[in-house]
Image 1 (cartoon, rainbow, N blue to C red):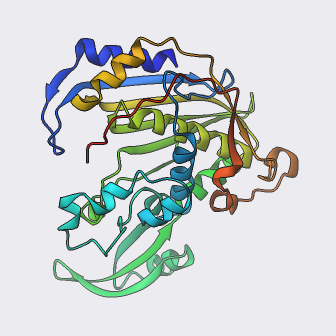
Image 2: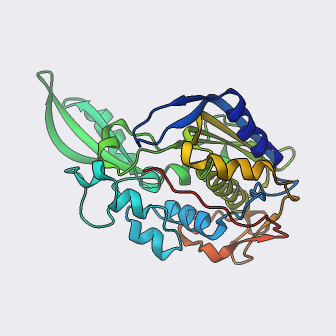
Length: 323
């Protein structure tokens, strides 16, 4: 994970202090990227202990479309507690539905993206085509004086990625995202890791992932998100018959909170250990062996199905999360 330390040093060298919504200043750098060859190891930070179980618990919650901090706690992840119950802006929001509610965050968008079609009331052929595609009729509406009908269906974006990797692996459109302008105010926290694109190479039998993160807390968030993204790629590869290869991580606003400076300077004084390996439980079906796509395993996996082998790390370091 020398690449992570190099990013930290770049922010210290080139970043500028900025104010932000949390009230805790950040040293911010616009535009950064990290790239890992997963055949050489798993991108787990080693200059402190990675909260691996918590990161995987969060990923499993996303895969299940969790919308409550209680759901994440049951999976061994408590990082959503503060955003659900201590973020004053969310506590004051009319969209918040009681204790632990998060709204339609991450996994809800991944697995149940709300898709709508607004069609002219007289366009029977188009209405029937939409219904044949799984859209349900919501009802008649008026749009700028024109009689229309509104149709709706939830889209499982991640399932569509699995289908495309099997049936159209050369596509450059195998992606999902979590940014929904219509629902941002309904979320405890708008998504930071936004866009996931899978790129398959049937010739080599490899699949890679590009992840774009609009805003990243490099001290706490980056190690967490790197572990989740790499673990997701391993899982998708298992379910679609590929080997995980390149994981490229793009950051829009890469920042270090003022309260994380000493934690990160201590990590820069430590030499990283070799990368560990990620192991998936044998109970997760391998498409390469069965030839059967089993997308239900996206929601069936448990945190215990993921483990690190050969993980050496320096002593733990802690810092407060800015909410």
